Amino acid sequence: MWGYTLFPKIVDMSLTASVVIVFVLLARLLLKKAPKKFSYFLWIVVLFRLICPVSISTSFSLFNVIHAPATT
Image (cartoon, rainbow, N blue to C red; front, side):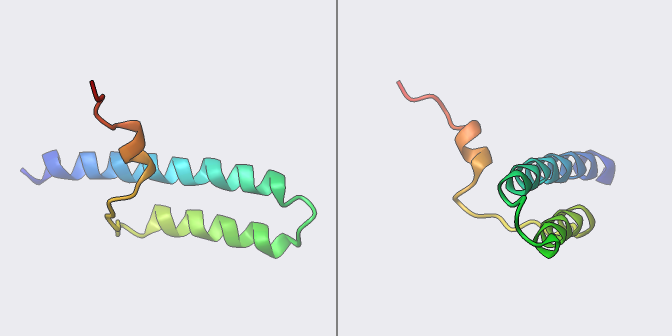
């Protein structure tokens, strides 16, 4: 059933987009004196992440740090 695989992908993409949004908001705080075109460029990155369903997988990820198994 394609519904069981589609929904988790949409949720995952939404979560990663929300992380990107948080980073953009933090970057805007640092770039208050910068020209507005930098702010617009940051929001274009967010828009691309929300529209484009492509996800690049790498071994380095913030989500790997959060979900890292506990070592004993």
